[in-house]
Length: 71
Image (cartoon, rainbow, N blue to C red; front, side, top):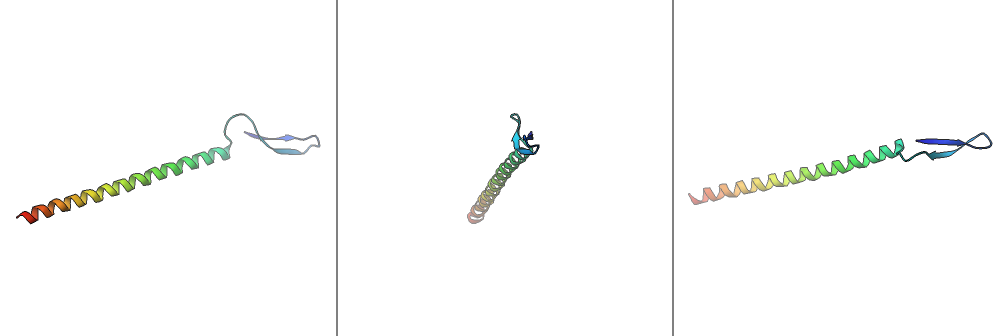
C-alpha cells in the first residue's frame, strides 16, 4: 500500500510504501515476468516437439527406404 504523508505546510509529500506487501505496480510487473517465463517455456516445449516430430519423420523415411531397397 502507498500513501502520501501530509507535510507541515499542508501539502502532500512523496509517495511512501507502507508494510511489506507488493504495490499494484509491483504485482503487475511480477505477473508480467511470470507470464514471460511461461511463454518462453511453452516456446521451448513447442520447439522440442517440432524437433522430435522431424526426427520421427526422418526415421520413418529411413525405415521405408530400407524396406524398399531390399526388395
